[in-house]
Amino acid sequence: MTFIEEKDIKTDKQTAMQEQKLQELLVYLSKNSPFYRELFAKHHIDISAVKTVTDLASIPTTTKDDLQQRNNDFLCVPAEDVIEYTSTSGTLGSPVTIALTENDLQRLAYNEYSSFSCADGSKDDTYQLMLTLDRQFMAGIAYYLGIRKLGAGIIRLGPGVPSLQWETIKRLKPTAIVAVPSFILKLIQYAKDTGIDINETSVKKAICIGENIRNTDFSLNILGKKITEAWDIKLYSTYASTEMQTAFTECGEGKGGHYQPELVIVELLDENNQQVAPGTPGEVTITTLGVEGMPLLRYKTGDMCMYFDEPCACGRTSLRLSSIMGRKKQMIKFKGTTLYPPALFDLLNEREEILDFVIEVSSNEIGLDQVLIYIVPSEISEECDHRIRAYLQARLRVSPHIKYVTAEAIQKMQFSEASRKAIKFVDKRN
Ligand SMILES: [Zn+2]
Image (cartoon, rainbow, N blue to C red; front, side, top):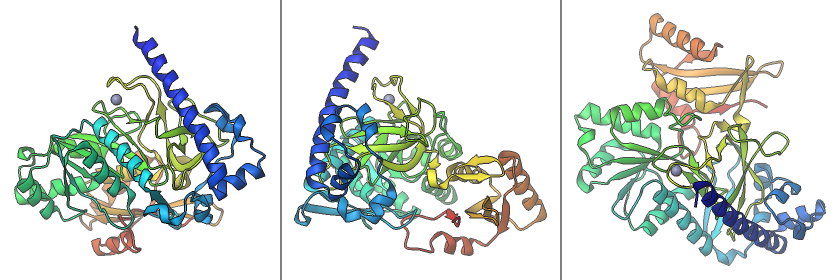
C-alpha cells in the first residue's frame, strides 16, 4: 500500500468517526444545552440535516461574548454532576467558568496523555511542573492527569523561584520540565549567575506552554533560539485553551501542533466565517467532541494561526497548527502595518538593552491605533536610547512611542490585577 492510500484510509476513518461524534453532539446539545437549544430554534436549524463537518457551516458560530454573557446556559448537566470548576485567565474581559464532569476529567487526562506521548514522553520520564495547579487553572490539572496516565513521574513545584527549581532538579533529576518559555530564560540566567552547569543536569526536554517558541514557518523564534543556544534541550510547543479542553502539541519534528480529531473538530475561519486555505491565517474555531459539562459548537477562540495538511514526518496524517500569531482582538493596525503582540514581544525580548517591557495600545482622536512601549532600559543614557529606537524603527519600519520606567514601576504594571501571569500587553482601545 502506498503512503497516499494509507493516508486516505486513515482520513476516511477519521471523517466517519468525527461525523458520528458530531451527530451525537448535536442531539445532546438540543436536549441539554439551554444556549444551543435556543440558537437552533432561533435560526431554524434542523440538526438531523447536519451530517458532515462541511454541513457545520450552516450553524452560526459561538463567540467569547456568548460564553461570557450566558455562561450558565452552556452547562448541560445538573450541578451535582460537576466535579471541577475551571476558569479562563480573563486576559480579555471577565473570566469564563468551564465546569467539568468526571467523564470530562477523564477526557482531559486522555487529551494530555496523547499530547505528552506525541511530545516523545514515556513512563521513563519525570516532569517538573513549573506552573500553578491552583486558581482554577485547567492546564495545570490537565498536565497532571495526562502525565499520571502516561505513568511518568511528576514533581509539582509551581511557578517561579528559580533557586528552588534548580535545587529540585539537582535532587530529583527530572528528565523534562513543563514551563513558560520566558521563565526558562530566567532559569538559564539564574544558573549562569550561580555557576550551575545546565548542560550537565538531568533535563533533556521542555514542554513550552503559554508563549510561542517558533515563527509560523516552524523555525525557532528569538525566545526559542535564546533558550536552545544556552541549553542543549529539545523544545516542544503546546497550544490549548480552557474552552476547548484539548491541546495541539508538537511531535519531535517540531512542525506544528498535532490535531486530535477524536477530541475536537477544528476550523480556521476568515472574516466571513469561511474556511481558509492551508498556510493562510484564520481564526481557530472549535467544536468539542465527547464533552459533557460545557460542550461548544463552532466556538471562535479568538486565536489566529495557520494550518498545514501534508503528512508529518513522524507518520501522523492529521493536520497541524502553526504557532499562534496572536489574538484576533489584539491585532494592531499601526501606521499601515498589521501587528500582533507576540511578534512585538519577540522583538523586545531580543535586545539586551531592554530588560523588561509593557506594550500599551490606545486609540488616538481619529480612532487609529497608537502604540506606547514602557521599557526598563539596561542603562539610562542617550546612547542606549538611540540603540533601542534605531532597532525598533529598523524592525517595525514605524516608530512607536517609548517611555522609560524603573523595574519597580513595570512590576506594578504587570501584576496590577489578580493575574496568573505577567501582563505585558495593555489594550486601552474602545
Ligand atoms: Zn509529527
